Image (cartoon, rainbow, N blue to C red; front, side, top):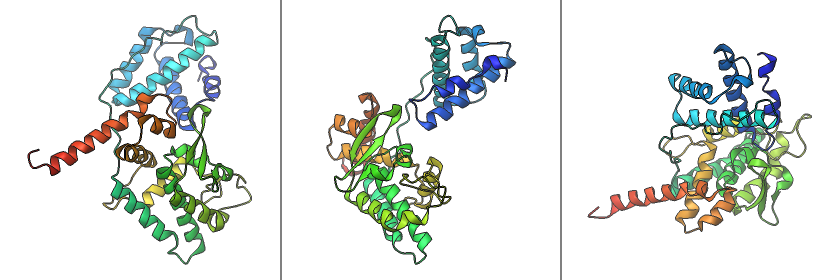
Length: 302
């Protein structure tokens, strides 16, 4: 890639974003730079609103979904804004860049009984193996599942936990969320019991000479657990009907089940670490859909 399109300083500047967002933005901006080089846009100063609109149209012809294009457009806007702040371009042609909005997809949330059975099975298997390494893995898996659901953690937040972040005595978890924002959330009794059991006998089975001393969850190589490792945990623990959840589905379930139980929306916002209440309100739509389903299946005149 030509030096003029070097995007590494921009990627380095994304310190307030989570690791997943940084990776996505890096990929999307490199993709834009390659397209510009091929399409006769020799350097960032050649960018204008028309070029950026052409790029979004190109993404559409490639068959990307609307949410994917919206994410890529967000990366482009952030990159062009960075170029403008650095004085590399005279104005910001991406300021008014818009993408067509599709219908907002609501998260697929397991029911309370489905979630309970998943966790009960995981708890039953945590002490069922005679093999020490297998028992340690099951103890770790159970602690991860209980924290994802019991405290509503993002998968990256769960993987980033240090041992000191789970306070077993005060019964809370300290989390570093998106944008470097710290919050403290309650931990459920099953989650605390699972973490305590894992710390007593499970974690040491994963420790190697290369292991970080402070990381709570370690993978089979002794490194800090990654989101990909967490997805594998969910693959080993499907719902009773065989469906495999994404780790984020347990965060969705945490919020939805709280609201169904009568929790205040702003309290749920704080627990989730959402900066904007509108982000939390999506769960009220999920709850209304579920209530409608209950009504239609149970009321004699529905």
